[in-house]
Length: 151
Image 1: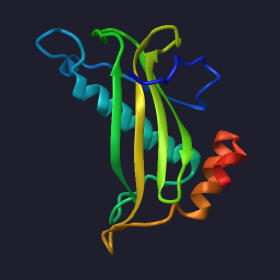
Image 2: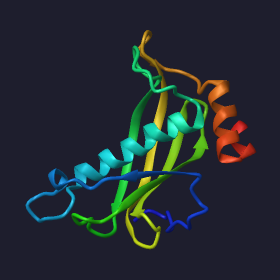
Image 3: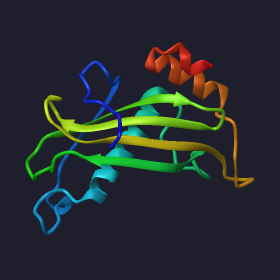
Image 4: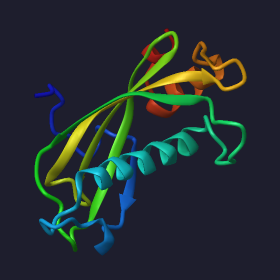
C-alpha cells in the first residue's frame, strides 16, 4: 500500500474534471481500471499545458516517457459519478518528474484512486533520457509555488 494520503482541496493546484462515460464501464458495471489510468493521463497532459511546459501541439514527441505507474484503487467509480483528478509534481530528479495524483469526487469528499507516475525526460532524436530542462523546472516551481523543485 502506498503512503499517499487523501487530499484536501488545497493540496493540488491543478484539477482535471473527467466525464465518466458509459463506455468506460466493464462487466462489473463500474469504471474499468484501465480507464482510470486514461483519466490520469488526461489530467497529466492538462497539467503540462496549465503549468506551461507544453503548448499542446503534437510534434516529434513531447519530451517525456512514462517510466512507472502505481495506482491504488480505493473505491469503485460508478456511472453517473462526477469526478476530477488532482495532480501535482512531487519531486524533480536530474532526469525524472515524479507526479502524485488522486482521482476523487468533484467535491473532493470521496477518493476513488490515488498513486504516482514517474516520467523521464526523453530525447526522441537520440532515443535517450536527458536532463529535465531548466525552463521546465522554473515553470513547474512557479506553478506549484515550490522553490524546492528548482534544486
